[in-house]
Image (cartoon, rainbow, N blue to C red; front, side):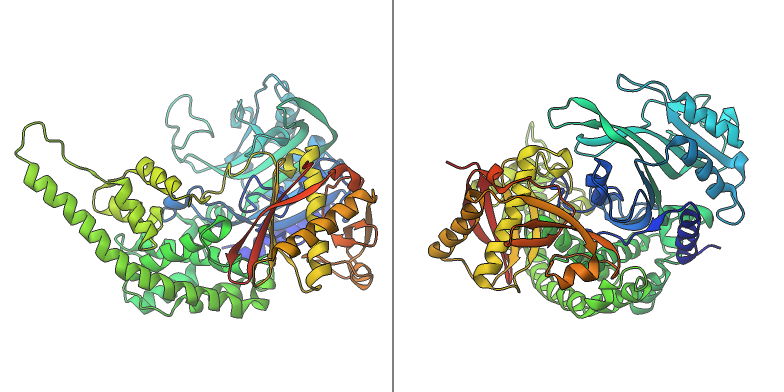
Length: 606
């Protein structure tokens, strides 16, 4: 058996032997990519460096990155889906390329010192070519030269990687699989099949191109390598267990829930609930305890967090687990991850407090909402029974949008919870009707992790970059007016506007809004150069640099200086001069959660 810790140690040992520097995981709350609510891949925090900016740690780096994907939240409970996962990654930022990476991949997979896999059980896929790039014969030849049989090398058109937004760095990739030993499902069976014969373990992406905001394609200024190995799924495959939940990562939580509930994880009736609790509370612990951690709310990341916690609570009730155990489960994960993510231990009290508050709120909601939900279902069933003998009567099979919205608006039921409960009773929900009711009340919140906004810093557009600089000036203005205790609590930037969250316990007055606008516009009129410098972290702090950033004392960090107004640790990119912003206007302010305010603003405003 290989443990999580051993797999991470092997990864770092291997890539350090190839002259890579280990960097810490970035936050799961992305600061510079509004195309997603959470960091969904290891490369997201590195986009500026893949596009050519110099990384303080050099051209060869590796890490284990915290990632969150909630698009498949309803699938959690099966063998493999998770909302939080860890991604082992290594990068070449304009250094080595295919000739080095393919032999290294083979070495790490097959050397007994590392994973020690049988080369005859490894299958790989290679890019088959498209309008942008030709068939990748070089990568196929490199695999064959290492000892992979031609019969186990498959050319596929799908071996092309790009960000989910469809904009940014991209290129051909080569995926690696373990052959499970099952027979082929057909003569055409290959690693793209979902028949279970081939189990994906690693992906090497060779970035040579960039899709621009206007969808034009250009060559990158440098060639990059970006690889990713999902830790949980790899651990599952290496240890020969059927599910990611059967690894040592989840064992303590599942055992705790068995002891409290008196029910067995091996009982197929309860297994999905055990898994949902274990997954969702791990993710909630990571989100709240993150260095940019947030609290449950009704918008954005806070809404996703609230949904995860409440879904876990509901499945705890299914197992007859009494209230008051969320904090204890969080402690299990805090202890487990304390070496890699010390911020969880630092924020332990906050994590437990937020979980307990949300549980208290939701139990009240659940008690009232359940009664209303039963009234809705009983009403449908009575109508169906009464009208059953009427000619041309069609049985009602879904909860109306109006009823679903009332459950949401009056009783605090998330629409996803209504859908889940309805499905368990054999009914659907009129989502279109719900959305219409939602829009009419102007309460439509963003609830998914993909396609939330268009554009973003990942597309390297001029206006997004300028708005990022406006964010810095906005924060500088807030700190100038109210004190240096003011910190960024989140940001979201598109090419049209910025959205900025900060700690503040009241609404800004009209005079304060005007004063803040004047501060930023004064900086714009002064045409101040925006300068980027690199300093060791400890020295940067001594010189007054601020910003949410984890680093060792001697680690070089990127700092953007705007005259004597702002000196902030940031990965960029930015405008070259404040005059590029033209004019700044605050369009809206609102509350996000207790003690957190939000400002929306635009530039180039006349």
